[in-house]
Image 1 (cartoon, rainbow, N blue to C red):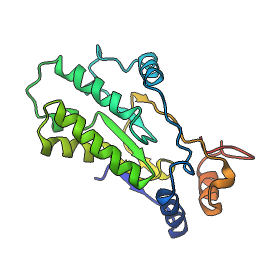
Image 2 (cartoon, rainbow, N blue to C red; image 1 turned 60 degrees about the vertical axis):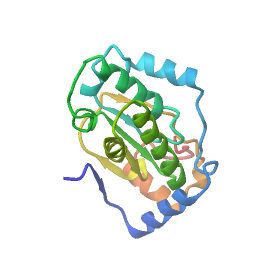
Image 3 (cartoon, rainbow, N blue to C red; image 1 turned 45 degrees about the vertical axis):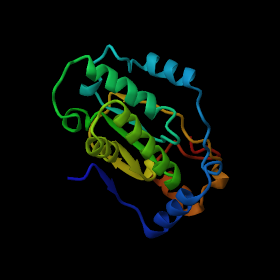
Image 4 (cartoon, rainbow, N blue to C red; image 1 turned 90 degrees about the horizontal axis):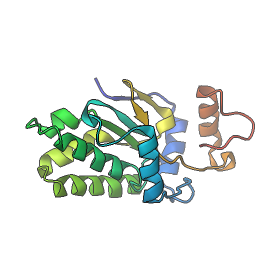
Length: 186
């Protein structure tokens, strides 16, 4: 069974594809300083003294990796303390789900994740397998997620509703009662 299940019209797919091809500025990309990321992860309880490989984190808009790369580093550090000899793909594969709309940003961050994993001593084929399992290119707000999450962290995109294509905005409003009047995407 696939982890993600997409159900939306061709018009919505076209609008989402258009946004995914757009520039990161139009998508509301605001970068987060590492000190802020570490503070947020700490107060959320996503700390290396926890068995993070047995927990699950969701990052709904991973962008350039401001949150996802420190999340992975913390996960690897916590897992290394367990002295496990298990296959990392099996033991860590369900620990993260991260979504990114912008295709080029997704590709760049995917590469950075693989590099982080291989630099940490994980075999390249397993690193690629983990990155492929953890990272999803798509619209988080149109994605059905399977399973529960212990943590949801990240920096949401800041997009005024006037910049969202009408059909896509209507679909968001149909799905989310909190998106009404002059609400921003975040």
